[in-house]
Image (cartoon, rainbow, N blue to C red; front, side, top):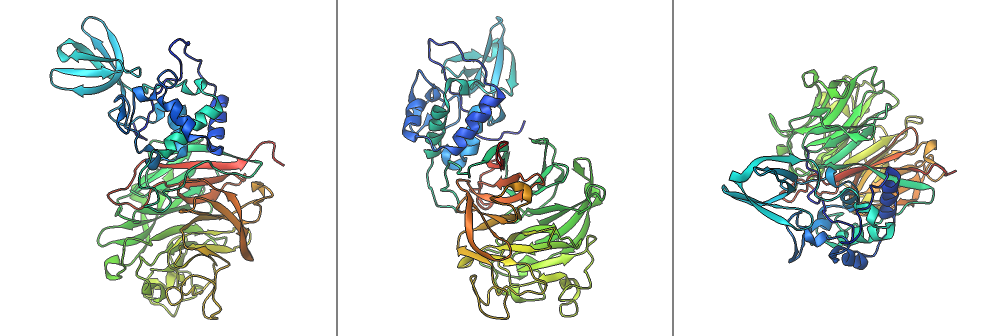
Length: 544
């Protein structure tokens, strides 16, 4: 079992005298999810619900501050660890999110009693078993016939049927306030609700992702998600498959790890999967590889290393494990484009003898196209360089219809969206980010003050009139999604706000926008696992 989230609330939304409410239908649960994601709620009223012994009984199980029981995890800081999306799921699908140590156990005693609850204190002589009402039993081990763990939460699945949408949202709003250190890490201060234009809806597809970095939407409906620790996850028919498509041995620190994925333009007929990851041996370097895919699994033995990057220990930087880039996509020319950051070292971005701070271009087999702009100017493998002067081209997108490329370069003074131009020099670090009139540099079509620009993609006509034909991009710190005219740039239009730490986004052919939420900062000793999610934003069925 994969333990997704240390929450598994075991509130019971019934009064002492009331009968247990019936199970909610899928439609009812979807309505509650939509309402709670898109309405603010009243945290003060939510605290009253949480505290009331005869309404939710949350404090019978959970500690908040110095009050509460021990059947469920301590929730004193839960709103800082997990976003609104995870909090909602923990109440609607409690058995999907059980932390290790808080599983329900069924104990059969020698005299025929069957008791269920969470094991609390235990010793070699006895165990303590407590249920969601706060009732506990101390049972001698000598009297136990068997103990069977269950994947069922002590919290009832029908909690939601005892709360109306407003009450449910109030409770979520209160849980969001249970946090400390707000704003100490970029993007951590974002709270719900999610704001959407009229005619669009949002739903959660997957939660519990660890260190999500990038995604790709396949034509057959599958979605691939990179987890930084090296697992490439598969979402199929709306479900996260247990087995990763691929597990790689990566250097996992700060922004290093598995950081980019795409597939061959003719996939699955040509069944190549392409990834960008940071390998540790024989030295820390970017690696672009391709693998054969069979079904939902890539064959590890089929790896072909198309490009080995530079030894990062020789390039410097105040945080060398930062600014890794990693995005890769095919253009309509059939060539593979890759963005590599300058690992905070700045000057390599202007050096044709390193890949750092560059956009690269390769054939689908790793060969260097003879029409690359620096063939004859750079040496050997560095002829793969297609553009230079980037800071951290974390993501980019290519319009397959027009060939237009837009590059999201994470800020100096500004966040930049730059047009992809063969042979371009974007100026970093000779000039800072922002508009430029210097003829030797290609300037951005859109800028905004320093934050952290993340995923971007071109919206298809099926995305609806608000987005069709526009370039859509997200910001990790602000938690919003904006759009611009992809040709002329200029000012941006708001689309969505209230998302905690969006890291990548991609459109499907049907116009659905998939947004990957990382909800974690860099990989360090404070890194939060299992906190990412994948959401889908699309037009409502009645939208015109």
